[in-house]
Image (cartoon, rainbow, N blue to C red; front, side, top):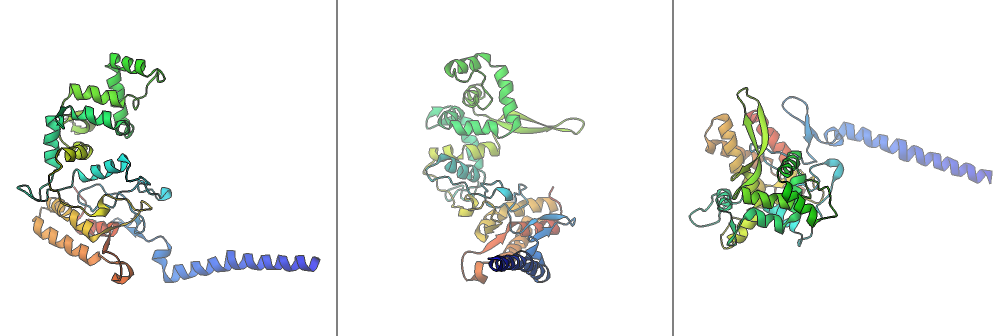
Length: 338
């Protein structure tokens, strides 16, 4: 009995030493000596020498000078890797795709072939008619209550704006409480639909958007104001504009521009996606560097083709570009975006 226990303990000790000490240590030594860059997370540094991110994890880029990654259901949070898991029948998926398309999609034929649709979305919104009925904003809020509530909850300034509105629209709030006795003290998100309905009547052809102003002392202040132009309108109302212009031919966009990856953290985009963004990126760097757009575009296109690769050394899949890698090269080459 004691002999069997002794052998079992020795076997356990041997397994612990091998599996918990020798094997991990061997992997660490090989990783740090043969593959130190990959073993330490593929971390790359910016021009100032500080870590800029990992080539394995996507991160957001908002400036027009940079290429932008795929949308992320995880908000590019490495600790919350996930997909959206939205069904094709879920309007939230259609809305997310539409909000991405609004500012970037172009006409595919006709007198405006190749031009952005965005300015026409703004003009259509200002006319304030959807499917021959007045008040686009009211129809949007009534049809998509969850989107109206999401707008209020998306930013503390939005919620504060609705709170201020509620303080000056007592009868409307009282009517809401009367119609919803289960909500005696409504929060800003509860009032989202009635807020947009009232806003639509008071500011036809306008949407509450963030505006930044600089005072005489050079201090910038932000506020929510009625606006008839801007990316908020281009994004939010592209889907409704498209329904009103169903016969208009639009250019196709690369699928990975509007779809998330399974992890939400894919650091790559297709070369086709990068080429679609090329005009915007080149135009902004040309302005920043005070150079001719054509020459800057040629340089950046050459960079994309140099950095592009396909899985299995080109044996499978489309050519891909690592967004962080390319953007760091642009930052090093052209300086700090203005």
